[in-house]
Image (cartoon, rainbow, N blue to C red; front, side, top):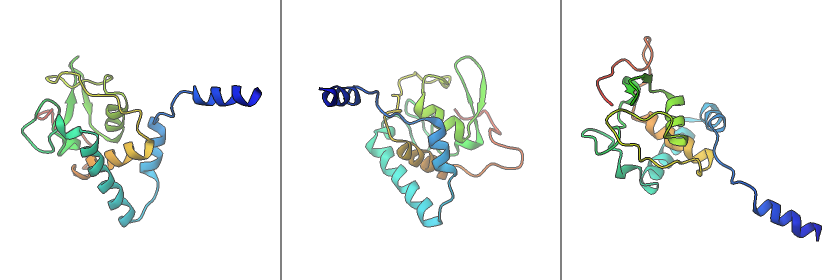
Length: 147
């Protein structure tokens, strides 16, 4: 009887959602160039499988959600007027908690992707980072021109 109760408790446990710290740890871990390229390729595939391309364009024009190319060269201007640097932390939060920082001019209809394993969220972020130049000496978010 006790074994059955234990099985029921495990079956009813909340799902193991991706956490920001777990994704950050995966992305910060040292890896070879080949392993990094593989992570980016996995992210590119997930971008299609998870239907991200239905709303996000890689390059202009936008189609209902922010354009993803060169994200690190712009700031996100939110619905409350706040400007935020687009960096790794912003990307992770935007994928895991999309309602926290809604970009002005776009409806908030992005799904919550916390159901994905942290490794898959890290792959998506690596793919997005591959489309942005590295930050310059003055930091990220140099312009507010693009949303």
